[in-house]
Amino acid sequence: MARAVFYGQKGELRQKYREGMEDQLGALGLVVNAIVLWNTRYMQVALDDLKSTGHPVLEADVARLTPLLHDHIHMLGKYDFTLSPEVAQGQLRPLRDPSSLEEYLNRIP
Picture 1 (cartoon, rainbow, N blue to C red):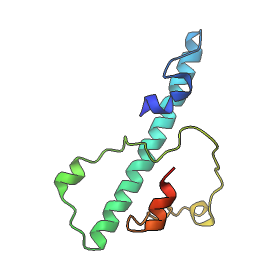
Picture 2: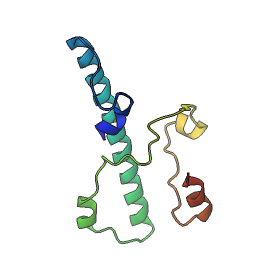
Picture 3: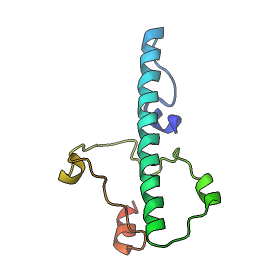
C-alpha cells in the first residue's frame, strides 16, 4: 500500500538531505496509518452489520481480512474533503449496498 500512496514520485525518495527524506517517510507513514485505521473501522462496521442481519460470519474468514487493501482509494486526482452533516457530527458514512446495480455501475470507470 505504501508504494501506491507514494506513487507520485514512483516510490522513490527525492530529497537530497536526510531531514527531507525523514519528512517524506513520516508523511507517508501518517497517510498509510490513516488508511489502515479507516479500513479497520469500516471492516468492523461491515462485520457488525452482517452479524446483525443474520449472515454467518466465520472466524476463519475474519482472520484472513486485511486493512491493507486500497483499491477503493483514489490515489491521484482531485479530492473533496467537504463533510456531510452526519459525518461532521461523528457518524460514519453508510455502508454500500453490494446488491444495488446502480451503485455497481457508478463504480465502473
